[in-house]
Image (cartoon, rainbow, N blue to C red; front, side, top):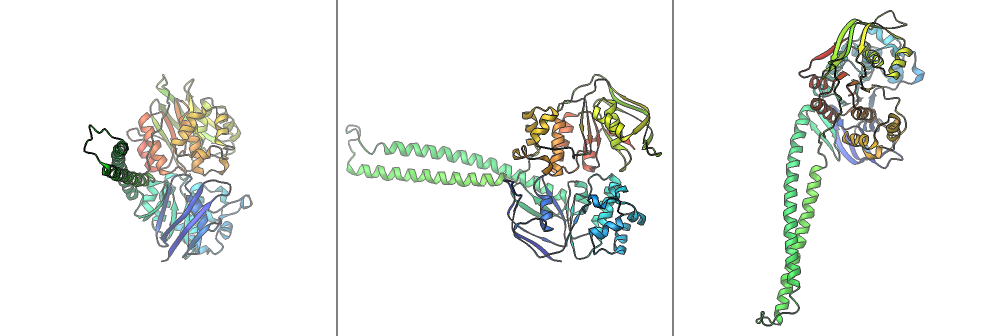
Length: 516
């Protein structure tokens, strides 16, 4: 057991006006199972890279020198290599027998270690890298979003595995995973950093309580400041009025006034002015306290959606649908039948590689989206059976792939034909800073890129919203925000997502599922 100490850590990216960390200090125990939580763009991955020594910084990181990082980097030069070959690149100190033990705990067969890495599913790749990661000794491990793109079965295996480990930082927005794995929370708040014992749910409960208290205290401060301003204004007017009586007087009305009266009036005025200054100092102190109360409050701001009513009940219908790729004899699915009716929220469920995104592409093509139709033809995706899309159906689609995002947000807005002021307003509500509007999206975090696509979908009026893994990389606060939006506006939706808390919330009372 050792203490990892961060002292006066300061870091900013070259060319960026924003400081990511400004004289930050905290300590963590190398024996903890630590969850790292914060909004997209707050510096979670940056902090892990700083611990790995990838960036130059000022301040100090001491007490522990051996770190390892997930996910391992895979470049074009590793194409065709097996896991057994790659583990020697990822962790040269790893022993084969140690990796095999970890693979067994992760419910993996030994033969997967000797298959080309790119032929493995997302879940198999993740579990293999975790097996290599945990095969070492005396290391503090940095795990960055291990469950993105994983199906529910793979997520459960990873959750069970990590719950039996210790000595790591886990970056994740999956509330179910965090609750099942961690024993401490490191939170990158809006203006501070906090460490607390417990899991996500216990931290969030405390967070809501403290934010509620801060909001109530803020209201008290506002009332106190208002009273002080009124008292200061009244005293100031009295002092000014009194000061004006020092010189000149009516000998008839003030027959008892003499030369000493002026000094008395001056002293009284000075006392009143001193009282005014004291009021002003108290006002400044109350304002400072008030601003401090609100600096870390996380408010779930309301979003808006523009679903369009469609006159027919059934929007999408499939009957005896079978799919396969032209170069594969194995079908992705067979004899699939379902309907998507107006007002329903339907999830496509299945393991990685079962054809969820392929089914979405077929539906998009059937509804007349040219890009999806070209993709289907390019991929040589074949289908048999009936697939019907209601005529004139307007769709709003979120692709799980963000690699096509190039240039600035303003460029994207123009390319997509979005109304700029409305689109920017939604981005701000999703906590995207205005300073990001003119930065290249290639430099964004994956969570920020996802918000670009989600905001575009929200401002697009549609009969049917089709979202393919929209919550990957999205911070927990924005997830709650989107859950609230969907429950309020009740749009017709077809979704793929593996976040248990999100799916439970959205399908509550509406158990629509397409099983692949």
